Length: 165
View 1 (cartoon, rainbow, N blue to C red):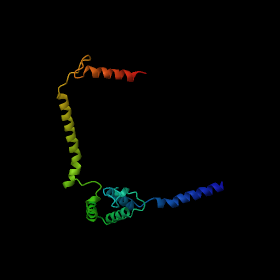
View 2: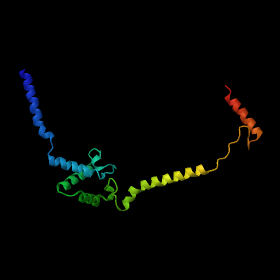
View 3: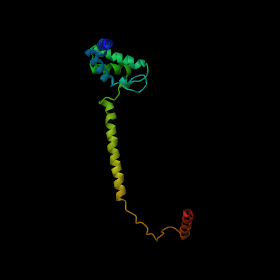
């Protein structure tokens, strides 16, 4: 019984001692969450074409340095707009994960809807033209308009030969 109590005491002390290590300070956690939120709006500039917070290159120094700068700017009290301007000044507009919804970049947001609308109109137009086209009467089973009797006989003979088992 004493051995069990000793092991239990060691386990409880181990959990209590590691508890502070598992809990991050509230300010650091909020800063990290805010950095992740803002970092999700930028691309990693290492050439991987991934969002900054999701760059999965092992030891990617570009994403690490960009996130470090972002954390420093947030710790300094910079706003999201100021941080965005700093990244655009440093890397250009290609740093955006999605184009801004203003100016010429608005075209990237509007064009998919325009293409969908134009495509729908074209499909409706083509279908209406097909429906308005006069229906040509189907030839009766006994008539062979435009086919010579020799060709018809040859085709029937070939079909009979190919279907024999």
